Length: 480
Image (cartoon, rainbow, N blue to C red; front, side):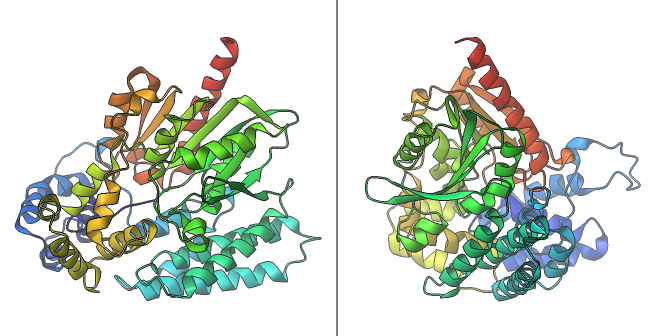
């Protein structure tokens, strides 16, 4: 559900500013941050020219400058100093309203995470996962099914969290063992739902699509939403992101993964493919074969990097009644070049593969570099199945809606985070290209939902996007 830059990102800006606050005594922190980032000249110039604005936005209203509070300048409290670790901790916390986590135990685990130390992140969450898993197994699930379900769901979440920063070493056995542990715990939780979720597999042209069907307790054919994740998220995550919210609203939910995503990448050894309709169309076929799905009210949601995958699929799969992009992306390749910075982009455009790979490897293999930089490379290469940053950029260029956006027929909800540090501007561009087919919504930081993918504000995200979907379905029924 995130993507990091190579040399400079808004995440680093916000991280430096949040940790330094505005005190003169913290100026050395900013100076050291600049040194640690090892920025090229162009990136350093961008940092210095924008620093004043970011500092102004970080000032609380109580500062003695006579300022009136402006909600547009609100920021979210950073829990731990490491920007990327903080985002991941927030992403785990965000699942609490939908049985994915409990706040206190995560904050205890977060206190054990050391800045820039991937192993400390793994250990903190693995210890938490095994402890909560033990609690779940000690509960008599026949007498206390809700308690057992909650604990198994939380354990599953924490096993997935422990996996987040391990993908720099593809042969790390924990990549497989953790996934088995998270899936087993999730399955135990699903069995304790009022209507248990059902794992299914659908055949595509040369791969298999794993999915889970969650049935609402409402009778008859019901509206159904197909939920897809993005760059690093899982189908299990999506239950706690939007799946349970759909069930609460009387809709079915189908969560799935395609090539490049956790289960398919692990067990079928496949990286991301741009032709995402190859993934979605078999799921639509399956949904329409069920007697509890209303085929006239079938929607597709794409989360994070899924914000380009879902619209892409909808350009070719016209049986969808609506699309939700959280957050919207028009051109992933363009966003990637901005993330990598002008120097790497120039080398790439000149076709200098060796130089690109060597420059990026310097960041990737330097443990003193910010974790968001290293994670972005590690995860990108793993999920796109390449050991070359140059090839990663080549593949990324194919994930664009240029030339096909006009083929999208369904209405599209385009979400945007006010402080989305990974894909700024992309949601607005998608909205512009869609024209009247788009409904754009800016989730503001003042409402607690301004981060990428509304991390920390899933209840509001679901309120806004699913109310829109309800209205779309209602209007389509009226105009039949």
